Amino acid sequence: MKKLALWLIVFAAASGGALYAQDIAGQWQGTLQPPGGAAPPLRIVMVVSKPDAQTLRAVMHSIDQGGQPINAGNVSLQGSTFKFAIPA
Image 1: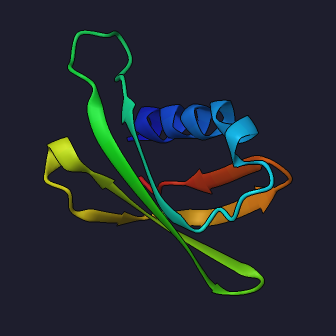
Image 2 (image 1 turned 180 degrees about the horizontal axis):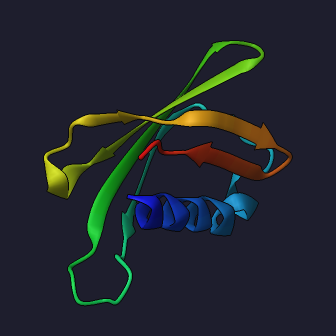
């Protein structure tokens, strides 16, 4: 699970340029290639919300692993860098 979280952070950081000057709240989708490349890519949906002006909330859904919601912790946006942690 830690590797999945690491790859999600890399994915979010790599797409940071596209996030600049946009509202981060919304539904973000992409694929995640598990380390080693032997397993097929996983379809990921990240739902980011802003319950108030100072707080971000993120919930991840791995569509190919049942789609159950996984709450992210420590969600932050600093400039164009979006960071979150998935508890193990």
